[in-house]
Length: 288
Image 1: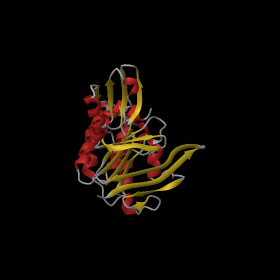
Image 2 (image 1 turned 60 degrees about the vertical axis):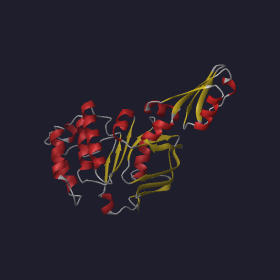
Image 3 (image 1 turned 90 degrees about the vertical axis):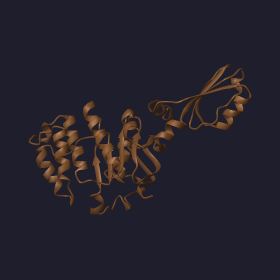
Image 4 (image 1 turned 45 degrees about the vertical axis):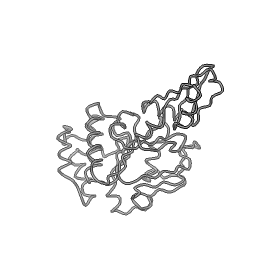
């Protein structure tokens, strides 16, 4: 399997505050990854470091097999990026901006651009400064997709969109994911968006990717476990990230269920209940 992004020992600080700490992460071609993290966790910092927009203090990043500091023009043309904040030229019209961007790429999918402009009802005669925040974000998404990149990185792409706009954007992600070997990373704080399109989830916490797995595996492995027993105070739940207990019950959230432990307790007459959790609750537990 081909690696699209490989990150090793990546560290970054701002004003003596450590944001990323020797972060390791490897992303395979064809993955659609939702990047979750609390506000201030460093999602935007990580993305800008990956793309070398704001270089890391130390560590290394390779994109599509090349060092991110010395990407060839051919590799740059295979990457699409949507920033969280619109930083495009405000005095150009949408049409002028599209034509300006087009000249930097050998390949440009005019039909896709026209289809999205029509579907999203964007007035191409308006200047970028005249667009609403949501319409401006739609233009950024179009520009990121116009050259049919193999690797797409979106930083809170739907944050400025209304519900209809978010639905349309997610539809595009689903369509892109259906294409062979497209790799997509999008940061978000909306877990329901992630669940609709991602096949993997990465959670950024305390400067590192603390959890990275298939979405289904995350939802199956991180669950609530409750043991009801008159010996509850003497029972320890394995793989628990937090627990609370009294004389009759011990509750915990685990990162995996020890089935042998569960069977042994049940054979001794204890009641063991396992309850699935929503992705939002899992995220909150893992970053508590």
